[in-house]
Image (tube, rainbow, N blue to C red; front, side, top):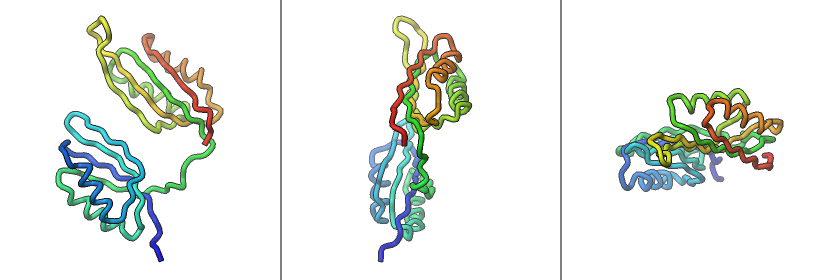
Length: 176
């Protein structure tokens, strides 16, 4: 009889170097783990990643012990209830661009929290503005919200944060 399967979310961080992903993947594989989805990035000389895996529940403790021994990589593991996905949610994509300044992510996230919007993913970066010495802030986010969300009101509230903030909200009309 097979052991019940568990879903585990791993976070990993360390100084970036070749072979980090391979050592993580090999460790997961040795414990019969199945790598389901991940997001990984190189930021300021560091490797950072988050991985969703499935594995036999009776292999969790052994996997955690082996992950703790990985050289140059700090890994945390949390059991996830994959069945607890929210249903009836509306999906949105948010893109915004504006002059970079301290506090912009805090202000945008406050607006989203007030509207009970969940941030599923967020990518931010800065770039040089064309024909000026100023720095532009860019954000792209995947969001979920209640079906009753007024996207125009959300866009207006975000635009009031700054007179130079350009906001684009795309709605995915599928409801989970």
